[in-house]
Image (tube, rainbow, N blue to C red; front, side, top):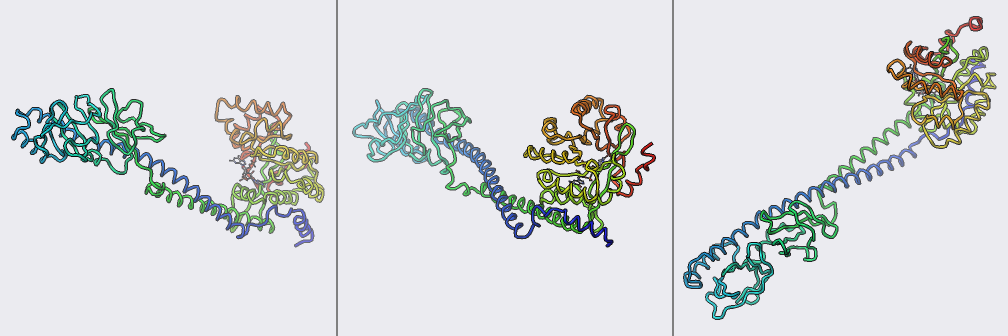
Length: 544
Ligand SMILES: Nc1nc2c(ncn2[C@@H]2O[C@H](COP(=O)(O)O[C@H]3[C@@H](O)[C@H](n4cnc5c(=O)[nH]c(N)nc54)O[C@@H]3COP(=O)(O)O)[C@@H](O)[C@H]2O)c(=O)[nH]1
């Protein structure tokens, strides 16, 4: 290596700041992987569990409503049989309680699935029945609990007259009564339901039976299909077709949410998805860390190169500067700057990139910069550079080594965060005080707003190419871009139009802001230093 080059290389190593963060190592990766995995699994399980729980609750509500409907379909058969039996008994020819009558009552009882007994009444007393025959002394019926809107009286859990200790449901109408097994209706209810069956006659409501106590009786209107709240719980409500009975029902809560296969299934799915996401994120981080690690080595070996994109003055199309853009190839494959710059920022390596680029610019362009004081190369820097109090000092010593004036090197900042504005402004002020020009890159995107300009004292804005595109593609371009140009002018800020690809765009901005500079495919693709220097007019021509 020639002496001079070796001295430069040594000088770069001296000036390159120690890496802000040590190289990522396995000892840092595994805990991160563990955290991401555990976090992903936990979040996934929680999200899956909640989704499962919500789906399962909706499904349970729907199923509770269906079971209540099913109940009324079955209970209707018993009710219909009771009504038919009472009507047949009342229509039977006299004499009541005679041999033929009692034989008929017994036949009805035997052939019925629900009837425990059937009997004849006189003035509220049982006088004969299918089970007891003709009573020597009439036995009074207990007081009715409820009278249906059709005039049938109902006694719940009443002692069956003449059979002490035996209870049943007694329905009576006219001179006839039937006794139904107390379980006849309740056995139809699905045991998984928490429920109450209510009978109504328009003015009165009675808890017929159920797992809910009478105090839980809802007070508001009972409308088929409209859920009711009991003790903060939602109960589905279904009523019989003739609206004489309603049932409130909900599924009993499982002992644990995971007892439900839906919740368990979704939780497991969530867990797996979370683990997958955790693995994916760790793999992405690992890839970026590996990329940053390779970049670190490439920088140390001096492999990345620079490309320069010409910047022209729009008024006379003369080249007044260039932007230095880093390029990195590995195994003959160019790695996109977007990718490795982001990885470098994440790994705390961006300071090394900035200093590397600065040194390479000085190595490649110092002579030109010394010879052409009006020519400026801009270097991209990051917020991390500005927050580093030593950065301006590094820059000053590098420039001094190459005897390049600070005005020959400008800095471009893409600010995307709203945090630490005060410290960023101080970093900008340090560089400007040293004689550098500062540019806000990609103006118009992210947080680079007007408020931002007032806070960060810069020299110029570089208009993002998304705005440049508007110039030739919309009738409203002047309305949108005019105010930006006037603002830059009134704040005495320079304007660099980025991404100029077409003549029409250059013409538009030349009319709108004659002092503006332009950069883009139209001014030239990023190119090696030698090609850029070849495009510079010679001194005499430049002076002319
Ligand atoms: N911190 C650093 N960031 C850097 C450095 N070098 C580049 N970068 C940033 O990476 C991003 C991508 O850059 P690159 O792929 O180099 O793209 C640049 C130009 O090639 C592209 N460009 C220029 N003119 C046009 C155009 O007319 N049309 C079009 N579609 N693209 C064009 O724009 C990129 C330059 O943009 P900007 O920096 O905003 O002026 C990019 O964000 C770079 O900033 C580095 O050394 N350090």
